[in-house]
Image (cartoon, rainbow, N blue to C red; front, top):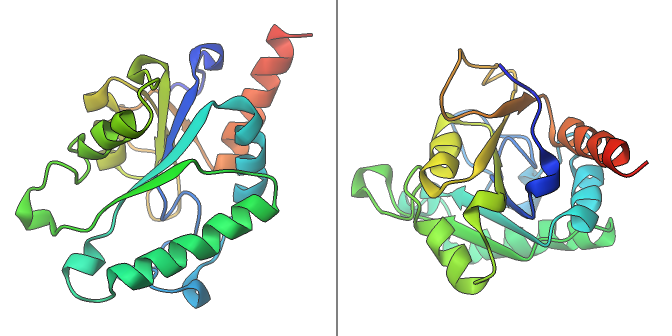
Length: 192
């Protein structure tokens, strides 16, 4: 699986949430701030990304709301909590998009559908998907990115090791921090 991208052409970052920023809860959902656990190096990576990308958005399927396991209010409380953490650590997220529909509803905004990409483009008309990077830990994240015309980075985890060769994946990294370090090294080699 290739692990090299031309980062110099990328200006917009799309991030999945669970399994990329924070530790995923197996067979459950992160429902409140007490359950939130940052993945190692994620906050540091977000701080680096803030200086690199013009726009950074989160796109996350959250069907736990649709299942009635937690409310949209709970989801917004959790979002305010982690966004404050990001700000306090020198990072930024420009907007968060969620799809709270059930998988069986076949909603266009649920990844791998591109509805959340369309919403991001409406919020930020300057976004160019060909200059965008989607980073996630599932094949549906990668399909979402490719369906919208983005480059894709797959974050490998114990739950989701590096998959076999996939047409949807441009590069694999073990963490957001590893991706940020690769971008910094690439930037340094282009701007000695």
